[in-house]
Image (tube, rainbow, N blue to C red; front, side):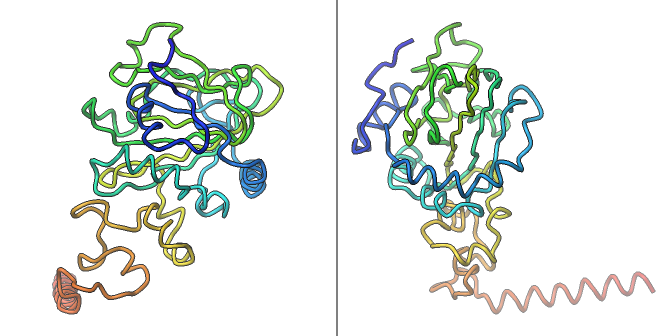
Length: 300
């Protein structure tokens, strides 16, 4: 199956052009965005963790494939990539039905020789197979090529225009390999049908998934364990907001006494707290004392 509209762009392409392909094809490829030096730096920072990562436990994860996460904690280059203007610009546009978007997952995929093709699937099914409306996007993903992606080494296969279809309804042989050079990126929605290919070469194919989601759904990778407060306080606020240290929409993700997470993280007072913090703390302390007294009386 061929894409409906142009699906490949130069690194200086406009967000509007990329969005047109995302809406029509379900994906877009932006070629050679990152210089080799940036890719090599990222791999250098992650290689000790890749080496320590076990192979997948089943055919879907890939029994000859390693999936290495926790990019925020492990790679300075990766942290810069998470807030790359291409990522934030496209994610903000695709997920604009949500007040805010957030980082959902980081996963560096190393497909070793012999890695077999995945079953075709849609990634938004990760939310317990919830039936999101066909015109409502909750996920936007970026698969960065850290080596060349070829059909022979297992480049991801995608079914153009398959957003409205269930994976089992796509025609056999309708997928196409997403071949691209090192430093390029395959951008795709959570609805498009796709799956990793078979690596028939003697080389490892490596790519980095950066997945973003709406601010009101749970993140796939627990970013607060990856970047707990002691680490988070050392990171730029722009990155922290994308990680999820912000309110995702009207009332999702607040902290303390209905305060902005960033204010609580850094010990700052909210300018106009919705609930008076000191009064709330006194009430909470009183409740705790009364509960402790009640428990003590019952155990006498």
